[in-house]
Each structure stands twice: as C-alpha cells, then as structure tokens.
Amino acid sequence: MEKPSWLSKKLNLNSCHEMKKFLRVLKLHTVCEESLCPNISECFGEGVATFMILGDNCTRNCKFCAVGKKKPSMVDWNEPRRIREAVAKLNLSYVVITSPTRDDISDGGAEFFCRTIDEIKNIGTSVKVEILIPDFLGNAEALAVIAKSKADVIGHNLETIPSLYPAIRPQADYERSLSVLKTIKQMNGNIFTKSGIMLGLGEEEKQITDVFRDLRKVDCDFLTLGQYLPPSLSHYPVKEYITPDRFVSLQKAAYSLGFKKVNSSPYVRSSYLASQFLKSA
Image (cartoon, helix red, strand yellow):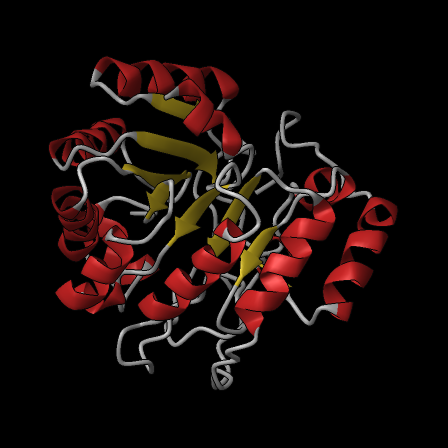
C-alpha cells in the first residue's frame, strides 16, 4: 500500500549522529532507535531521547513492534546511574523512561523503574519523569511499587482495539492492560495516567471510541493517537492510512469524553512531545 502525501517525514541521519555517539559511550538504549521511530531525527536533533531500560530485547512477540526478541540481557544495576548522567549532561527537564516487557524478571522490572526514577530525581525535583510501563502480568505488588514511585506521569499503552489483540498482541490481554491503568489510579489518585492507540490496523470508528470510553472509565488522563507504520515487511501489515482530518475528528471525540490532553496526528507516538501533557494538566 503506497503511503499518502501527508506521511512524508524524512529522516535526517546527520542530526542523529552526535546523540547516538553520546548514548553509545554511556551504553544506553532508546526506544527511539529500537522501535525505528519516524520522529528520531527531530528528537535527537533537539537533544531529546526516550530511554529504554532493562536491555533491548523483549520477552513477548507483538506483531507491530521492532524491538528485539532475542534472549534478554542480565539486569545492569548501574544503568540507572548512567541514565542520571545522561539526563544531567543533556540538561533535560522532562524525561521519558520505558522498557521492553521482561516477563523473565519476578516483578517485571518495577523496582528497576523506581531506582531509575530516584536517580533522575536526585538531579533536582524540578525534573519531571514520565514512565511507560509494560503490564507486569497484572502483578499487584509490582503495580503498587510503580504507583508509589516518584514518577509524574505513568503510561501504559492499550495499542489497539480488543478484537485485534490475538493478531497484534497475542501475549497481552486488553482487560489486564485496562486494569493496570485502573489499579495505578486507585493506588495513587494524584498521579496522571496515559495511554496510546495505533490506528490503521483495521479498526472501525465505533471500536476506537469504545476504547476511549473504556479508558475514561478507569480515569485515564492523557491519550495519544498515531498512525501505525509497520517497521518491516515481516510485521503486521498496515490496513489503512488515516487522514489528518480524521485524526482531528477523533481528537475532538476523545476530548468530549473528558481526557485532559489528547495528541492526535499521523506521526504522534507515546513519548513524542511528551512534556506537553503535563503542562496542559
């Protein structure tokens, strides 16, 4: 399927060079690189990156994702300190941290997220931290650790509509993902929660707005909507290119249901322009 004219963003590899060199020195991974994000040259060129802790390999086999599927690496307990060093050197005021799903770790990496947040907050309390977490297999103890962390925003992406989970996210569960957001909000009513949905996988309008309603039922505050772009020919194929006007229409529909902030356009991704959300709230 040929890309339409509105999907014309080009990568500028020259703008990525310095950031990639910096990250390699500190032995750090980013979801920007691992997920083949189309916004990478824009963000890297501005000295912004979304750090991916706990290695660059995932224990799940989602059909839309470019993150590696090899055996995960051992936990590197010095990584949080290197993240703090990177944040300080880049002079970041807003930091997004994510990880691959690590079902091989007893708590899914919850404690490691908290250690990383604590290291960043040691720079100064003015630095805001957003985390994008896996579902931790619904482990209530792990979610309690996350809910009590010093994160300012906690995100967990639903990614798509429930009926597409078997094809797109075969090892995930829609209701479990909703429960993650619900549980965190119940445990910490002061935290802002966030989720994201990819469009163009074959979903219908009502199915999309039903997901909006499900998210509002668990008091999710923030929402991102973006166009699914398969990272390779071996990944799940795109079924539809959503027009910019339709993204605007869906944004309005989401706002009407009570979301505090919605970013909706073809190149929107979970951590893209993430600092806008907290400022709006």
